[in-house]
Every structure is written in structure tokens, then in C-alpha cells.
Image (cartoon, rainbow, N blue to C red; front, side):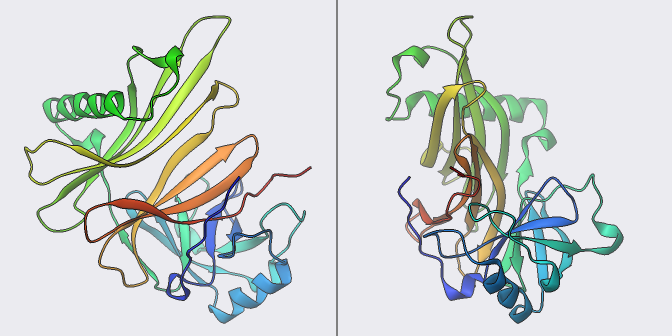
Length: 267
């Protein structure tokens, strides 16, 4: 897979992602060229004073401490892991999306569709389905005409008096001999509370129900002192897992600014 990297020093020394263990995290290095040496990331953890902000779609979830002495890399094709200490605020049931060292990231809380009135929710779902159906890169004839299902949607204000939303969408070919699924992650904006939504960025994945790539909106942050928000996106596929940062620009465009290497792509 092609890799683009534009991580800045002010974005912090590394990114933190969750594992199956609530008290163990993966350390994602800014350099996307390959898997880093766990010993080098141990030094980065110590230099960052091991303080981590754990962020989810609802905003700041917890502040935690990484133990530099526990950094270990079990396989060269996987990100190193480390133990996380967060006191009583972080249990097995607590869900967060991504972590940043120190205070480089200011969380932006997303307003879930579940908190809307039934009428507002129905309108937004209809708008999302319309947008998804009209995207220009719909090149798979087998999916055309099949309605989209909105799995999740969240609203936010990227700047004052500007409205935006991010949505996770899917549709399926339900034929028994051809069980295929398409997933979309979509960012759209409009210039008023009643204006027409316009797509600003999207990612699309297709495959069988067992192999289709998962696209997750992990968190929205103001990163490194930026005036515009950035969306952290998680990808999970048979080839491995990776993260990317999709940033808003002053013109209202959203574009990928950074993508990590792939963890778990072991031969």
C-alpha cells in the first residue's frame, strides 16, 4: 500500500491506540516507513514524561501514564506495546479511540445522532444516504441501486457558524452466493443549520462480509495548535491495521495529512 506521511513535531512523539487489554496500548510511530524499534519508542515515552490524553468521540475520556520500562515489541511487523496506568478511571468497559502525548491534542466532542430528536435524526439519515448515493467514485455495478444504511453519525462545528458531520455507512449484496459489503466513512459540511450538505472527504472499502475493511472515526481533535480540526481514522483489514489523520483546511476542504504504517502485516 502507498504511504503518505506529514507528521509534524508539534503533533507529539507518537500516537497511542487501544488493544484488547484495557491496560495495554500500542505505540504508533510518526515515521510511516516501517515498524520502529521498541527501544527507540521507550526513549520517546520517557521524553514525553509518559503523560497521555485518551480521546474518544465524546471528547477526553481519561488521562493516563505510560510505563516506559514496559515497552515491548513482540514481532517486527507489529507496533510496540506498553502498559498503561490510569487509576480507577479506566476499566474494561471504558472505550476510547486514540491517545496523544502531553497536551498536543485538544479534544472536540462529537454530537451523536442518538441524542437528536426522532425528526432530526430521520432528516440527517436521509441526507447521508443521498450524499452517499451521489458520490462520484461508485464504480462497482453490483452495489448500484442498493440502499445505504447509516451505522453511526455525529455532528460538530468545525468553526463557528459552520456545521459538519461524520458518518459510517454501509450497504450489502445479500445474494447467498455473493455476500459482499461496502463501507463508507463520510465527512460533509453545510454553511447553515438548514443548508444543503456537501461532501468534503470520504473513504470507501468493499469486500466480502468477512474481509471488508473497517473504517472507524476514532476521535476529532485540534492538533498541535491548529485552528482547524483533524479526524483520526482507524482502518482494520485482513492485511493489518493502520491509522490516518484527515485534516480540515482554511478553505473547508478535508484531506489526508498523515497515514501510519501497517501493523500486523506479517509474512
